Amino acid sequence: MGFISEILAFLFGSTLPDRAAKNAYLIDDLYNSVMLLSVIGFFGLMAVMVFFVIRYHRSQNDKSAYIPHNAFAETLWTVIPTLIFIGIAVWGIWAFYERENTPDDAMVVKVTGKQWLWEYTYEKDGKQFSTLNTMYLPVNKPVVLDMTSTDVIHSFYVPSFRTKRDTVPGMRTSYTITPTMKGDFKIFCAEYCGTKHSEMRGIVRVVSEERYNKWLDRQIKEANITDPVELGARLFSRKGCTTCHSVSGDRIIGPPLNGFVGTDREFADGSTAVANAEYIRESILKPNAKVVKGYPARMNSFAGQLSEKEIDYIIDYLKTLK
Image (cartoon, rainbow, N blue to C red; front, side):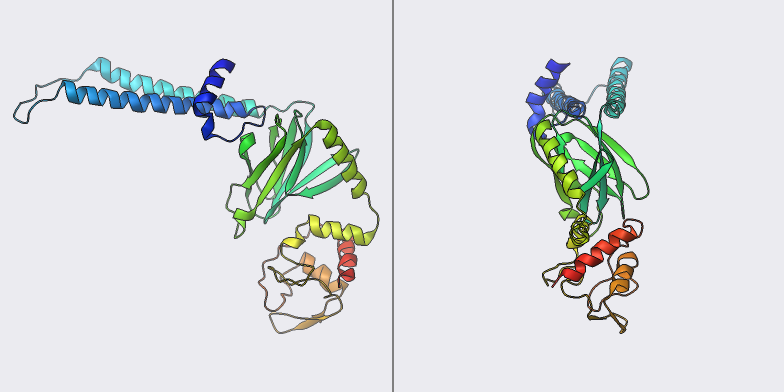
């Protein structure tokens, strides 16, 4: 099958992205075979039509002879397409279950979709850390993507891996891949998820296992920082707060957060309050309780996503912004 697969890839591979994962051939072979059947069917049908038009052409005044049905021909054009369609369906089901096989030595990366970014969580020796939008993976190492969403349905799509799986709030889905090619490969969200859906992109960076292990050890070490301000800054970035709030005074979606601690905040309902620790905690857990005047009520609650200690870290960080 490998030789036939290579021939099909030569004929139709230019219509597909790079094949950068071990089981991508399961999708490619089925796609290329359907393409080949379509091409043969199209030109075969056109050739028969042209032959009949030329061979049996008569003038307008000729009366056509009565031709009864042909049971053999009717059986052929019914049975052959039926067998082809059944074969494609069986092949597709087999390829689906073949892709679902998970090797025992597969590493696990948790993938979380949220408006509008991807978060990846890694674990080593009981310690965790997360990255945003850029996923690092070692080449030729099976990986299980353990996926969910915090808000709406997203769809994790890597064309070069032939990988597409929905991430659903309150539900865990999974996908197994084995990268076979080093390099950067694009990630898209393939499920409309709001106004910035088209910007929900990322990169899978596939590197050597040695480089991956060095990167993993460095990230684990940095994740164990104990300074609360530094931890708050990292949480602020990792949780995607910079998507809506700037720390430089620029207006994005939500109000800028530099120098706001201790100031009076005016809200859409006309009330005011001092931006103290209690106000910040409420804004994180119940963001629509007090909406700053001039800004939309579009922030999602982080209740259940941040511990009380992590909220304290973020508050300590925000207090340092000038």
